[in-house]
Image (tube, rainbow, N blue to C red; front, top):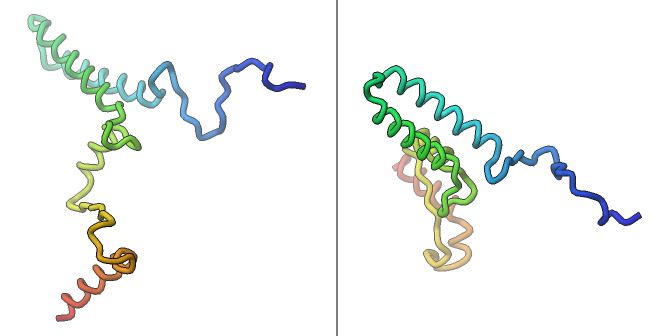
Length: 127
């Protein structure tokens, strides 16, 4: 029997596949809805009925910000913007740098970079 004639019924390829609705993942849609719901509650508590224009502006800005949070940035395609914001807030002063291959004189210097840094730190503590 030829399997190419079978209809595509939209079954996910494996258990870890994320559900997608049109262009957005379900988790992203939930995040946008929760963000906008909280913004609506805040707007109803803060802005009186006479300030409907400011309320609509506040809601529009929050909707744009919520959509920006779930977009994948160009410079870091493996993460979403909300993941990057959380990472920046929780880093606690830890910074990582990447090293270019051309910063080292030889391949052995490139391979021993982790041990070299540890040895320098240990010598400074002892000395």
